[in-house]
Image 1 (cartoon, rainbow, N blue to C red):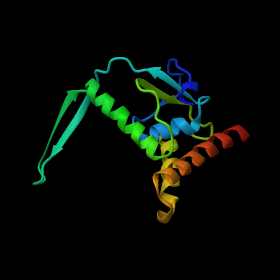
Image 2: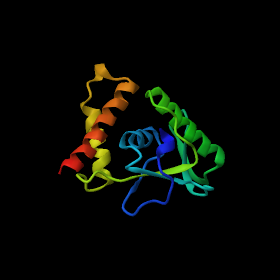
Image 3: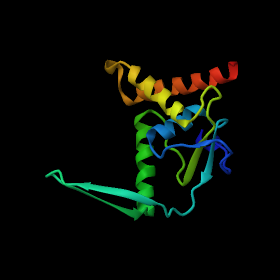
Length: 148
């Protein structure tokens, strides 16, 4: 299914999905009609590193992200997806989402997903059910967008 997601440039007004499990879940359930992937190319961005010791002291610094760190991020996302009952996704891409028309901005999109997650009963929680809950919320947002 991931192969059906188009490869291209970021369309104007689309948001870049987070490089984490929820970003990947959002891409999966929004579907290829609402998601574009763009080859990532060589990464040279700075990342903030925080090291906290057992005694509570911490130090922070910035460093350039490495290919090894990017691979670790991609592998972590794939692991999260598999634990959620979904297939791993292709590596080496930035992922962009067309927001549902009923939403005003990226904060509202993530806010709706957080609300859905918070409403989920604790006794029903496991990663597969959490992903399904987020997926149903995302699908409902797009369905509502096509009705209005």
